[in-house]
Amino acid sequence: MMTQQMSVPAGFESLSGYGRWNLATADERTRARREASEEDLKAFYDGVLPHIEAILDACDVFPLGELPETHRGIFNIALAMAEIAPHIEFYRGQVGVPYAFEEARFVAVHGRDNTWQALPPNGPR
Image 1 (cartoon, rainbow, N blue to C red):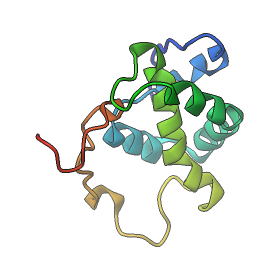
Image 2 (cartoon, rainbow, N blue to C red):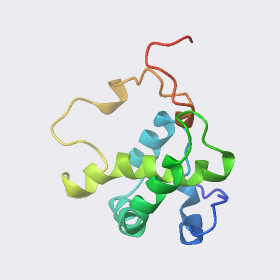
Image 3 (tube, rainbow, N blue to C red):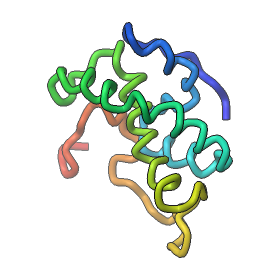
């Protein structure tokens, strides 16, 4: 997985090394998780978990759909954590969902949309 540059707001400099998980869409995050190793998932989880409440607090001050560019990187990191956490906490680090249908068959309605925009599920396309 390629590392990309990520700017972070003041106080979140320790997260700048997680730029490879700064992915704006659900499709990108799911693909990155499935292509990662168990070690990658665990390292990300262990590194981000202590910061997750601060990330959510920092992003929560903005109205839904109006997240500024300065905070989108840490917001995407929080969404990647939501994607990865079950795999650490429930699936023993496995990148796939055990005993489930093939994940590639699942198509997210807004999977290609930038999540920060908070589009309504059945809104205009």
